[in-house]
Image (cartoon, rainbow, N blue to C red; front, side, top):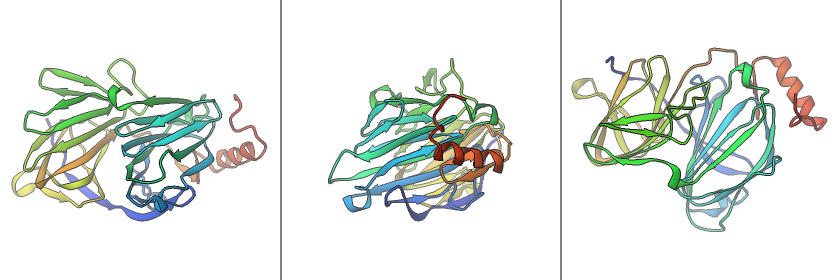
Amino acid sequence: MSTRTLQHVIPSIPTSDGAGVKLRRSIGAQRGLYLDPFLMLDEFGTDNPGDYIAGFPSHPHRGFQTVTYMLDGRMQHRDHLGNVGDLGPGGVQWMSAGRGVIHSEMPLQESGRMRGFQLWINLPGKDKLQPAWYRDIPAAEIPLAALPDGGSIKVIAGSVQIGTQTLDGPINGSTQRLSTDPLYIDLDLPAGARHQQAIAAGHNAFVYTYEGSVSIGEGAAAKAVPAQAAGVLTQGEQVTIVAGAQGARLVLIAGQPIREPVVQYGPFVMNTREEIEQAIRDYNDGTLTEAA
């Protein structure tokens, strides 16, 4: 099997979103700095309630999916479809905005630590005006398994083979594939542990280390991924990840590229400027969420 190496690094930069929530953005930090089909990766993590208490009040989306993965803390999702989701530690909310959704994401705590990720995944043009859908996934529904070399793996999306065991994530499992075929795993590796992960050939992939450090590859060819940065991988069928002296916690994310034009205006992501202008008109006249 061909092996992926570290191609380049996208450092995360401090920014804010919503009503002033402080976070770090890597993928999507600069307009056009995408990794098809991924539009944005935000990491948020703070013990200061002033950094998150204002949350993300009601706002629209069209043309892509949002994936919120909570490590610590609790938030609540509400949308125009009547969905109410309580996102707690280890839980995931997967939302496909499709033609249009209006939702809010607000803290369910006034103090304590809040930490997690939000990932934006583009949709192909044929799916951008499909009905919106939402799934709330508690931590208990996300497969967790021990790794042969120590540590553990959580499978949020996609299918992973560990020895003779197949772990199917609650999203994009082996029996029901999404158009971008996403793989989303969370790895917790002890010091010096080595993990080899298969990744579908042709998929774009990256790692993001949020605790400790890792290197991609082994021996003299190994390259370190800086903390709080997206390490974009070359093409191949597998990648070898080695934890540093303090161990590591990281996410590995991969997906099938769409290879279509991307035109983004804030919460709207379409293929053409005309489609963006239509999305703005639909939002202003109250028809963003109506059936096509």
